[in-house]
Amino acid sequence: MTIQNVIEIIYLVASALFILSLKWMSSPTTARHGVWAGEIGMLLAIGGTLLNQGIVDYKWIAIALVLGTGIGIPLGLVQMTAVPQRTALSHAFGAFCVTVVGAAEFYLSTPHVPAFKMGVLSLEVILGGLTFTGSLMAAGKLQEILPQRPLTYKGQNFVNFLLFAGAVGIAVTLILHPEMARLFPFMIGIALIFGVLLVIPIGGADMPTVISLLNAYAGLSAAAMGFVLDNKLLIIAGALDGSSGLILSVIMSKAMNRSFTNVLFGAFGQVQAAAAGGQEAQPVRSATAEEAAGILAAANKVVVVPGYGMAVAQAQHKVRELYDALTKRGVEVRFAIHPVAGRMPGHMNVLLAESDIPYDRLIEMDEINGDFPQTDVALVIGANDVTNPAARSDASSPIFGMPILDVDKAHTVMVIKRGMSPGFAGIDNPLYYLDNTLMLFGDAKVFVNNIVKELTGGHG
Amino acid sequence: MGSSALLNGLFVFMLAAFIGFEVIRRVSPLLHTPLMSLTNALDAIAVVGAIVLVGRHESKLAFILGVLAIIAATSNIVGGFLITDRMLKMFKSSRPTKP
Image (cartoon, rainbow over the protein chains, first blue to last red):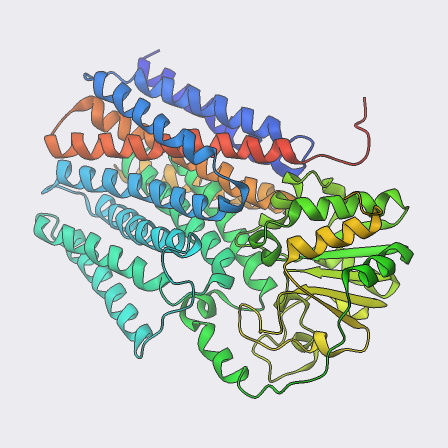
């Protein structure tokens, strides 16, 4: 048996471990085994690769591995609220790796690149390049270094289409004439610009979809790299990552009632600017922390609806104290999680789990919506559009058709909010003017804290 | 890469994509964030391509690009596994765990 066979067998074992790793993610009870399986698979694969007989220089491999570890550790230790931008940044790193390896492969093989290899190589660097800059833009928007609102201009889609056509045109030329190496940097350059332009028009509320989509692209570019290098382990890992990103993108777009193309080319922000114009002052009912505590204490079933605003106010730990205080009084408290709550898929669950709320209290939208009519109090904290009943009833609303949490069907709705300003998407929310709605004006963290104090008799 | 290697690759890709869809469809929405950071770490297996590139040292350009690629991919591997495990540790049930 040759060394090459040994490496292939190690890769085979690593592939199986990767699949098991994802399989174990199906439930929180087995998920940590999944991480271990992934780690073992990764160590085996890297160890196996080092057996490669073509390798003559180990020093720089070791140095690069150490440097990468040095960057990776702080990126693994970020706060849970910063996980979306960390994820976007790691998509960028992954895409960067794939793109530069693709470029190196090209310059090693030119001028004699077989047509098929040139085709997948082009796919690899175009997808990799646009994912790299697109993910950097997304990370910048999430970190609020860049403006979060969508930036749009006239003829945007036309410019994007031209760029895309240009990149494909160069790819086709290179497939036919691989010796025209001067064209190669232009192909990468166009892909890099395309990635920036793709994410510029996308607003903060659409980030869960965009991050998922970039995840899918990163996976596909890695799979393309597997084809270029004829490495089956890479093809498998890329296919797994690609399908994961694709599934999450579909779930996210469905949760916002939008199609992929709509997210990428729609620029949500424009529509609402017009919709928010005609709103007039309507009477709302408000309540104090003392009154809210009284209503909560008298309830049997409470559903808390957390949104990204809760994370911004850093209120999740106070929410946990509220959960404890109510549970102690025998009130059943559950949390309703909309699929796009937070800035990436599943973000809200992580934030609530971090503040020690048991995961079996976190209920998905489809499961909990039927329970709202039997719910005494729905407490909305930092969520807005995902509770907007206009999505069900008002065909002229920009979010019409989007699945929402039916909080308005609860006996009493309480909404903690800073003021009456419209939400992230700029749409007025009729929920606030309903007869069974009480507005609790104030900072989420302070207000929840005041409610807890009332419930625990001033010792909160 | 010959056409038989291409066909082999396409078979592998097709099967892995189907397995991916079936396995990931079953992942609880609770865990979508850790799922993404985990697949991100697994995706950084691209490091093996970069390692071979650096190890062979065939041209200066390929060598430099390879070193940068190893650094980027390794930071994803280390950071990805680390944060996934940190997140998963936080998920606790209110029910006592079964023996």
